[in-house]
Image (cartoon, rainbow, N blue to C red):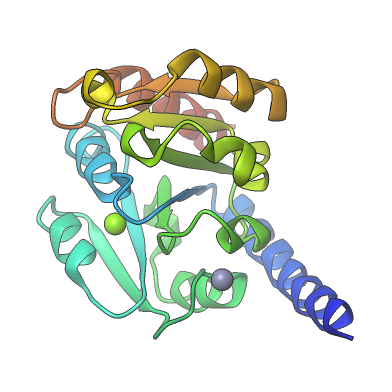
Length: 219
Ligand code: MG
Ligand code: ZN
């Protein structure tokens, strides 16, 4: 019974996600679904990304958060449009929530829409929102066992960012084993080691994102 309910929910979500994909294709807006645990550094990565790319491409952000607007307030300071979705305890964003926000945005004026999902390694991966690509942020402090424990999110992401790489020397994190686990789950994934506080690996990430956005907006 429960399995059937979940199937119906995901089926309904997929329908709306497909409509979102159509709309974003028409408007030539690249949509990035940014996922990861609470505290992995999603918002810090967003700040670093927007600071450098906002003069080259037009960016808007959807901030998914359980209760607060703390992340939205941080991102807003960079002068891009930010729309807050409070899930009021809901542990992921879904396609209908993103559709509702997309209807209010000036999509014609946008190149990149970044969706910062609710901090959670589990169900955000189950709910497509109509994104072009997903990226997962895993911080060194979370432990190298996480890819195998939460495989779906790593399987479905185009990029896996190993954040807080500057803390490697303080943590029991086996970098090679984490990277080989991620690659085993997803042979085509791009793995980027980065640190938002030490400005490491961020150009590789920004260059990649800029390239995929341009491929869609100039197609
Ligand atoms: Mg955040
Ligand atoms: Zn959830």
